[in-house]
Structures are given as C-alpha cells and as structure tokens.
Image (tube, rainbow, N blue to C red; front, side, top):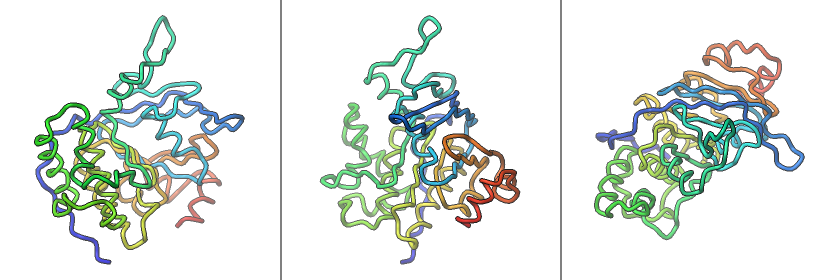
Length: 267
C-alpha cells in the first residue's frame, strides 16, 4: 500500500512546548521492580526517544509521566509543576482526580492500539474530549478538522474507525492527542500494531511534530526513525537508564555491552 501524502495545514494554536523532569521514579507491581530510580530531564522542544527490550519499563515510565501510574517513590514535573501531587510541608500529597485530569490536558498520549471510540466518527473522536470539557461542538469540530488536515485525513472526517487502515487510525489518534493543545506528547510504541507498509505514514506525522518544536517522548523499536528524529536517545534496561545521549553516540558508538547487544538484535 502506498502511504497517503500528509499535508500540513495551518496549526491549531498550541500551548508552548514544556520541559519534563522525572525525579528518582520507582515503580513496583507487587514484588516486581519495574522502575528503579529513573532520573530524566527533557528540555522544551526536545525529541527524546526511549529504546530497550520488552519489559524493561519503557511504557511504565510514560504512564508515570502523565500519572496513569502513580510512582511509589519520586515524582514527575512539567515546567517545575509536580504532576499528580502537590508539595505540602515538605512532602508530596496526591491531588484529586479532577485536578489530575486538568494537568493531563497539557500531556498528549498516543497509545499502541489507537483506543478510538468505534461508535463515533473520526471527527467526533478527535473532538470528544474538548466537547466533554465544555467546548461548543461546532468550535470543537472546526479545530478537529484542522488537526485532521494536519495528519492528512480531512477527507475521512465522517468515516468510522472500522473503515480505516491501522495507519489511518493511529493518525486519528495523534490528531486526538493534539486536540487539547498539549505542551508535550508521549508516544507508546505508536507503530507496533501496524503492518510494515503502514509504518511510514505514522512516522512522517511524528517527524513533522518534532520539527515543529513540540516536546516529544517516543518509545519505539524503530531504530532508523530514532536516529533520524531524536535529539536524545535513552536506553532503558531492567528499569534503569543505562545510557543516554545523542543518536550518534548511543546508536553508533554505545558504551555499554547491554546497549550493543540490544542494538545487534533490532538493527
């Protein structure tokens, strides 16, 4: 299948790119230690790509960043504001779910498996969150059409997800993630559920976002793509950051045996 050409419409006015700080984050599931003291700083506008073996903690880290998973130790900050917690007398206390939802508005999240509503049209999927937050439906649809145009799918606005290819569904999911005008967008293996011939169209959209100055944190096994778009590559192994730096260092001249072994299996 030949990927459709992605056109670039005038952007929906976006929140300024934000910086992300992960501070000593630990996460356990029962007796299993998944994250073991993650410290990571992502400056505003940077594209950070996270690589590592399945089960190394990459997806859990993304879910901790937007507080879908609550760290057992440590916390995450967006532009120096703690996410999901507040400082109180020298300690961090959990926020109410309504306040956490408001904070998540500045953090877009694109999942592996699209997570679109099958009973809603494409444009209603993109506009749904904004309508739920009180935006007038006509305004939400107008914004959604601009975003669909940006990912090359304006002509599919009235279609239902089941009629789209996997690549098209993931591009709709990206448009939906952008609807809240987030300062940072998280991608969790955005091409893992796609047939190989559909990968390129999704990667092109992500590349365009990175080029536009949006802060991106991308978990992927697409090493060639990481080399092309990343400002920094982070290799996670067994819940720890083992190596990080520019793609030319981490991907072409890794310092650690585990990094070299991983790359030898995926390249």
